[in-house]
Length: 209
Image 1 (tube, rainbow, N blue to C red):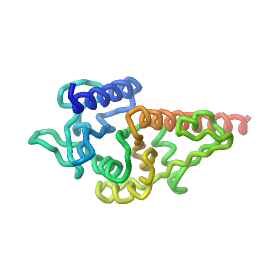
Image 2: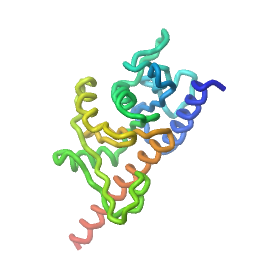
Image 3: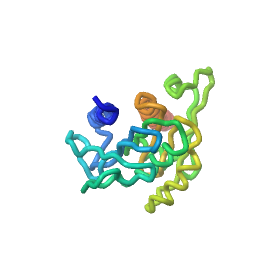
């Protein structure tokens, strides 16, 4: 099996898992995985595809500018430029972007603050933070409709080989050195969002008793 085929299978497996969690509503979301470093090329989800289905047109190969490597009728996902920033600036090997109700609500609640910080929750260890009082902060950026402008703001927070950024009322983008790490970042972030919203609800119920 070629390296391209291996990476395709890795990305298809992640898409399958996330689709089963209903994390791709209305064809939203996108996934990317690096194939080569020199020159940079990566597989990215094709725009407008139903990600609950599996076809030979789920992904296409693009270059370091996010442009298709071969002639194709497929269009790269709208947020391909975000993956371009990640792969060009870091040693990340995989990027994932999903729209969920929880990450959208969190981004709205804390959007004016520009970030949300989590502390004292065991799942934070998924980010490689093992200290007892470890904190993990996820930046929240404005949802610019103009993707190059969005990418320019997003790239300010792309400084490590693994990370996460929330786009207000849009979704979360995470990346990692490989597919497993990116998936861990995504799962941990979504867990924290859900936990935090449930905790706020419980606290409000107790206050109103």
